[in-house]
Amino acid sequence: MMLLEEWIRKYGTVKDGDVLKVDSFLNHQMDVSLFDKMAKEWKRLFAGSEINKILTIEASGIGIACIAALEFGCPAVFAKKNKTRNIAGEVYSAKVKSFTHGTTYDVIVSRDFLGPDDKLLIIDDFLANGAALEGLLDIAAQAGAEVTGAGIAIEKVFQHGGDRIRSRGVRVESLARIKAFGPDGSIEFMH
Image (cartoon, rainbow, N blue to C red; front, side, top):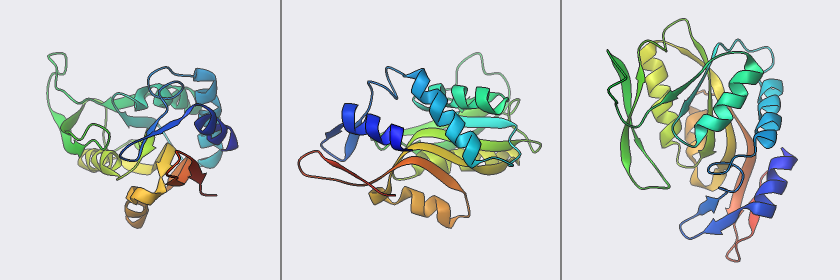
């Protein structure tokens, strides 16, 4: 998606440790007009697929997942990083190591919101090493839900998480695929 690549070039900043900072439009301050265009592109890419729920992980995936859910006409469910008192009953859970934070989380989804009748589209802001996506796939499997595919805003191809997920037979549609970061902070996209 050329528009997303333009925004990354214009507003993104490469930080040490292969971190791409895009918090001015994607995962802190959110440009919902851009999110709307992203959601429309995922709708086009997954046209003809039966999807009745969008699944994401907190926190950065929630905004884009909600706009995608609006486009697909279905609910959005997000995996929480902490069990709170307002989640009663049984949960599905998976361990996820965050690339950005370097922390491992137990992510959970209430069994009330996922089940074997669900056909899921997983949406997330980044795909780097694939840990978050693998955790969501694990939760979907526990629920007996079918995963139609994953819609990713930005994939860092050089970290190979996408290769690992695709090798499992999961369809991954990334709107911007980054091949490499240059030593000068430049960004090389893969088309």
